[in-house]
Length: 274
Image (cartoon, rainbow, N blue to C red):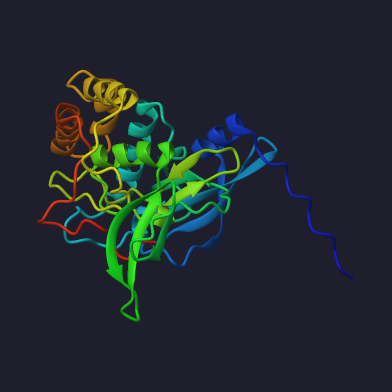
């Protein structure tokens, strides 16, 4: 005799999903094996509804030579806080909370659509509406170029990556949705005091900031000041020197009024790029 499976609860709406993120029951469903740190796909249950999330326990973080041990989850939450303060909503709702394997980062799951944003094309053949990043050679030695779309959503992400000093902006960390929103994920190696920006979004290097970008950077610089609400939030997640460095990057970018170009003393592209 085969017993019927219990009926799954209905999906949560946005407000319910955010509440579940903070206090719902976290049920592990599986592991995303491609991730370098322990990354678990989970369900959040409560209020008679459910939603999906990603859970990265601190206990599953791989030690790194340049980032203090056990700090990656806090950096993910700090990236969400700064994204929210910008008003651009780049990072999905993210919290630091307890789970089956101890405290960790819990982030709402993003359902994506197929929308090419970063690509590799035959050398020099940049499609209309795309921007050139670099030239290279494929496995057969043929010339290819790394390109990305000239997209306002990507550009906002690139600006925030400069401020948080994102050391790992891969193409696969950019998640477009059916509503037209673009989310960026995987910010565990951000906010270092030393310059470590590594990204596939160099297409705007050297270009002047736009008006909205200057407004957002000015607001972030103020909010990262000694009495700023954002600074107070980041102080609970990062080292004070990292919070000061974040404010310095925002004010420096605003003063330079141009998006930066790759430096010479640090790899400018993450590997792999996707």
